[in-house]
Length: 103
Image 1: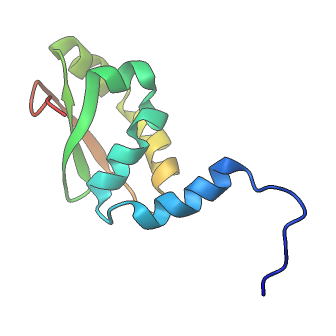
Image 2: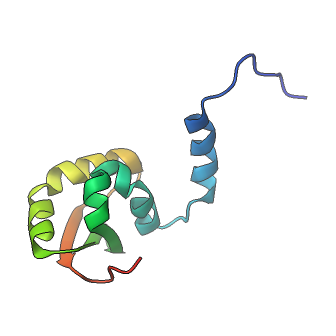
């Protein structure tokens, strides 16, 4: 019998363990799961990861202005994503307009 905890475990800790086992094993699935946290709600409403090939993730954007702006923010987005994905790693983000936008 396991020892009883003296206090409740934080929900984030509990869900993190469940999420790690429930999440698909592909890099794209991990990026899609981490995207909103890494990019932020505003960006996530306008752009989302749709494909991955050899550690390069393609992100579909609602408009060319979003694709251009996110390309300028690529280093920051990569840093945040890779921090969330460790030990997995994305080497680059490729931004396209309108491709596979229907979620």
